[in-house]
Length: 161
Image 1 (spheres, rainbow, N blue to C red):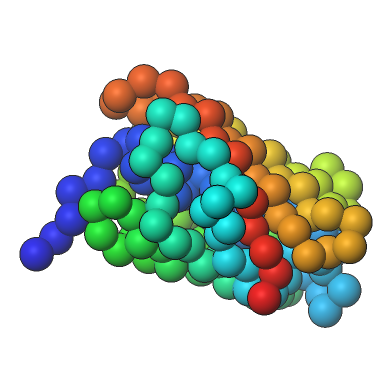
Image 2: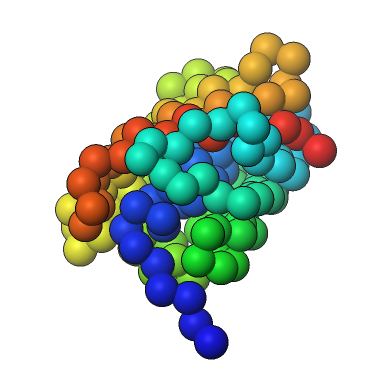
């Protein structure tokens, strides 16, 4: 049985997770604060209008000078696994396994902050800002966009594992 994803449901999971994966760090090295495994703290996160994911884990690995992002989430409608690889150079990178986002264009604005623009049919559908805390233990992903149901505004708080 295949789950049906609405733009908002996908946008919630994707924006938060993609933003996590793409948005931070100067170089994808062991010292890159974004590289690692991040788990969504649902209680500290807000998803408007919702619903929030039941759970989400994002694994971010170094990929040359960029990063490889793998998202494994459980949404209200069922599981969602997707990912992408980005040089964090602002150029569109293909997103695989996601029913709503087709590409992600990530840029790094500082060693601990970044922005990701998600597109579908070459049209921006969500923008995500990511910030890794000074202690490197928390990733905050703020996502805004529009889907078939209207606007969404999500803040996902992730803890490094």
